[in-house]
Image (cartoon, rainbow, N blue to C red):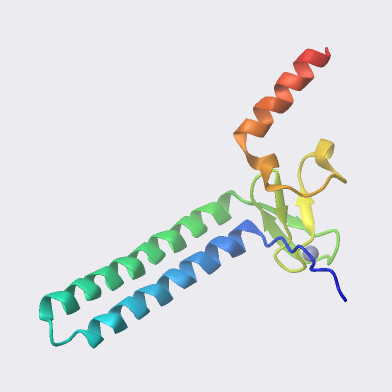
Length: 131
Ligand SMILES: [Zn+2]
C-alpha cells in the first residue's frame, strides 16, 4: 500500500488550470443553451452566461501574464530546470519541489500559510516579544 503523497503545484500552474476550466465551463454552459433551443430566452441566457465564462477566463489569462512578469525566475535545486515562483513559498512547475525565498523557512514543512499577511504579522509579533 502506498501512502497518498501530497503534491503542491505551483501557483502559476494552478491559476492556469483554473482559467482552462473556465473555458470548458463556458463551452458546457453554451452547450446546455443549445438543449433549450425551443425556449429562445433561456437559450440566449445560457449563451450569454457561457460567453461571460470565456471572457472571464481571458481576464484570468491576462492576470497570469501580469503575475509571470512579477514572479522570480530561479533554477530549481531539485530538477535544475528554470522555474518561476510567486510569493515566499511556491512549488517548482516541473517537479513540484517546494521552494522558498526565505532562509528562515528553509527546511520547514511547505505551507501556503507562509504567504498570508496574517502569518507574517504573527511572526513579527513573536520576534518582538523575544527581544
Ligand atoms: Zn524542479
